[in-house]
Image: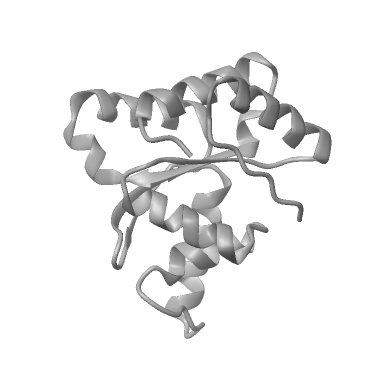
Length: 150
């Protein structure tokens, strides 16, 4: 989790420098940051690096931007909700998307709160060795890092 877009961008670029595969990264943050010139530039930069950039409106959170696997998971969750799948509570779609990629419920709540508080959540997926290398890199950059086994 990152409180500032600049720190999230440095983390993504740092992971790229150590050879982490960019298609295994995801990020989610509130869209209203784009009112600031620097953060609009951040999202343009992130979207040029990560796959599957997307914009969503999540009840109780508002507009969010995503890149990577989390965007695909969120789209699947929203499509499921549209055809009758139960999404509980206003932030259920984001929670369901995070849970669908293997994040435990207690962490899902923490990440939802972080996004609502205008933080950025960066997710690195991969093998145990890849995730450990990403964890070490991110911790070295001062990130608040948590790991979750799937």
